[in-house]
Length: 92
Image (cartoon, rainbow, N blue to C red; front, side):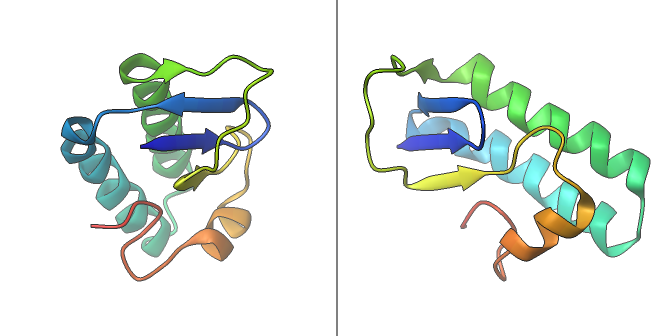
């Protein structure tokens, strides 16, 4: 799956990594619902770091259709809220 982090680029991730990402996504959603800004910042950073760590970055001159788009590291709670679906940022 191709994942884009807004403002950074794209990573190719194996589907086997989505269990870890979904756990962080669930945590992020709970922190957003509770208004925990510090937790939100920490978990958003952990989610994006996991994509960078687990994925293979695509070269800057390659543009693939992104199957999943994640917010930039400095995105506000309100900006991320607008990106959410019923499943959070990551379907499943």
